[in-house]
Image (cartoon, rainbow, N blue to C red; front, side, top):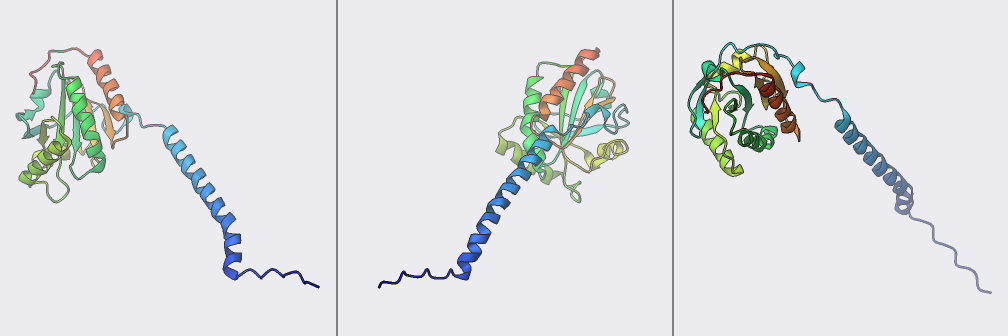
Length: 220
């Protein structure tokens, strides 16, 4: 009589794998659901209204920028009169700034034929190096060359303009972009960068340009 062969007992490691396999699948499903929920909420969360940010409605009390790269010239409050200005403070050390910079160059190109509009890109040094203009110039020029961008840039000597604006605008985050009307009044503020933000900026630029009239200044 031939006896049936008894199955060998499962090893402990095999038993553990049998129990852990369903848990691993559940964990993957949960992580996927959480990631999907996070993306959904990010896409549908209300975006800040740039016209309701701190500083909107206030006038520039001081303004002076010096050319850093390109063929610009010094810019003061008098140079802004009669022009709608998009003022972009950014830094080469700032990842969101580097993503936004090509969009700023595109905006400048799009409005190149309108003398009533001026885009000023202000390259800022990291904290502790604000008076090292030569390093700022070298790093800025290097990044513009790397990205193949035609974007004249300026710098804020001793961060004086930022310090004055700091009474109204929070400069702890970069990039920070201000939209000024023809009277030098802040009409919109954007802090940080997200994909598509330049479309929103363009819409508000058009609104301010259409709403106001005044003699255009000389192109910088």
